Every structure is written in structure tokens, then in C-alpha cells.
Image 1 (tube, rainbow, N blue to C red):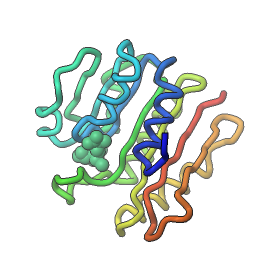
Image 2: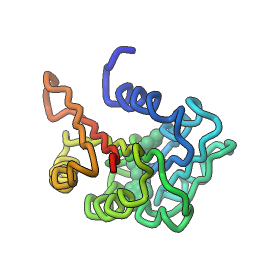
Image 3: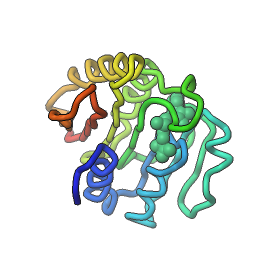
Image 4: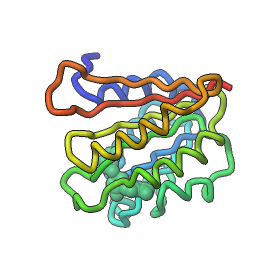
Length: 179
Ligand code: SAM
């Protein structure tokens, strides 16, 4: 695989974790690419996809083991009481959609606070950041500050940067629960 961009990087992280996963969350469903990718890797997982835009949920493909929910990721624990193996966030706005409907770092941090406690040991969260525009830059600074302060005895936090690309390229963080 060639790591052209964050999408191929996220795909490779999914391929390493999803085969042994059971409960997976797509926290920013949009057009559903992350959900469909996870299900293509392992058909027996259960995926819960969240989006605040109703049309994203209405347009979702009816697929086995995918439950799409028109609600904020902040409320994810209302829909499953099982421990989470994998969660993916693709921050920002939906490409080709309304740029004003975007993720909000305060909500993402509050969601992460709850999610971190409900992850299985060895469970992983993958987040793609888009700091190339002002709100995305602010969002990444605030979420990274939160992640930096996680206890290293409980979580590994790994950041993947394309350090030779210009103009604040997208980057990825992997959070893994170890205790
Ligand atoms: N991964 C998606 C795909 O495959 O199309 C693209 C996601 S897009 C970058 C970000 C999405 O997050 C938008 O569809 C937006 O509506 C959604 N979103 C923003 N705030 C949200 C929230 N609090 N809860 C759930 N979804 C949210």
C-alpha cells in the first residue's frame, strides 16, 4: 500500500484492528465511507454510524450490521451498552456539503471523555484532523491539547504527520487503551 494521504493511512489502521473487533463506531458518518470500509474488512462487526445531518442518514445504504443514527456522537452511549473496540472520527465538514455544518471541538472532547472510559482494553480510536483551514486548525489544537494530557499508563496516543507536505496537511491520531 502507498500512504498517499490520511485516507490510506486510516484504512491501514482499520485493517490491523477491525479483524479482531466486534463493536465499532463511525462518529462522523457523512457519506458512510468509513462504515462501509470497516464492514468490507470484517462483515461480522456491528457498526453504529452517527451524523447530525438527517440527509446523510437517509442516504445511507441499507447494509447488514450497520445501524445509522441521526444524532450527535455525544449521545453514542444511548445506542449501545457494549464495550467499544474501534471508533473513527473524520473531523470537519462533509466534502461537497454545507461547510457550516462541521464538527465542534468542545463536543468532540466531551464525547472522547465518555468514549475513553467505554473502550475495551486494546480498543482504538482513530481521528483525522484537517488543520488547513482556520476552524479545523483551532479544532486540532484544542483536541490535541486534550489528548496530550491522557495518562500514558492508560493510553497510547500516536500522531501521524505528513511532515514534508505544505499548508498544514491533514493528520491522524490513534488512541489505544492499554489499561
Ligand atoms: N467520513 C465521512 C464520509 O465518509 O463521508 C465524512 C465525514 S465529514 C468530514 C464530517 C461529518 O461529521 C459531517 O457529515 C457532519 O455532519 C458530521 N458531524 C458534525 N458534528 C457532528 C456530531 N456532533 N455528531 C455526529 N456527526 C457530526
